[in-house]
Length: 293
Image (cartoon, rainbow, N blue to C red; front, side):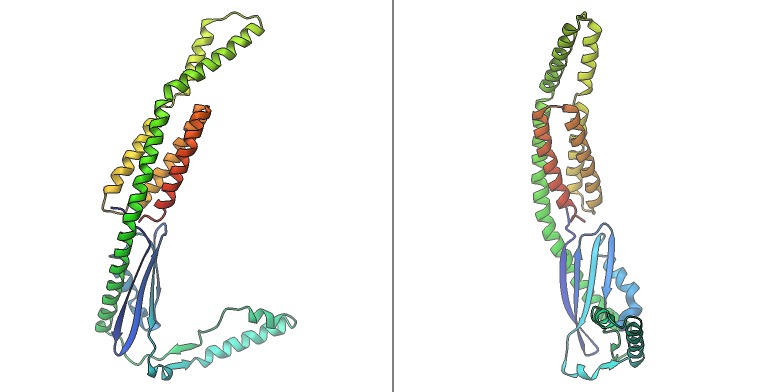
């Protein structure tokens, strides 16, 4: 079954009297990219948190935000890193000295500075705290996964619909394949006859054999077979329970390549019109597959 890479889940956890909101947000990405935004107190457990997340996600950008929910006693827990404040003060003075006319404007455009503020940790972290945190991340991840599954079902329905449209267009092209080849051959014969008559040359049989060979080179059988093969591969991937996004993305690229070859070989307005529709459907499938895990 197809899974989306877009999901969201949240949970709350109380660790040693401090209340936290744990949010897990996932969006599409070529690989698995985990970004953790958690209090420094929990930095010793980054590796374990990453391992926990990898149990739920195989692909996508995974953002984990751990936000402390304010309480009445929080105003006593904020301290100022005066050493860091002094460093910023020295830096601002240097900017103003080197750029006396524009220094203040440059400083005003800098991002807001919060690194000299830090929160006092009133407890020591232990395995019990880690277990509480991992359980909360687990809960948020499960909710995000459920959302990915739900959206994956919608993606699956739309991709299946577009795949059926793709198959119908291939059938239309195939039904006109022999007709197009015959028209192409007749067009070349008429052109050859005009040139021979204009220049007073004989109608040699080898000329027409060469034209027949050229007409065969414009046959679309191989392209149609490959396109159908790609469609069959896609349908098989839809049924798998493992992540298939990358494989589908590769197959869609091959479909677009075959569509371009078909358009160039056919050299016919009718086929060209069908190929434009074909490429449009492939683009729609490609757009949806970008969010498939």
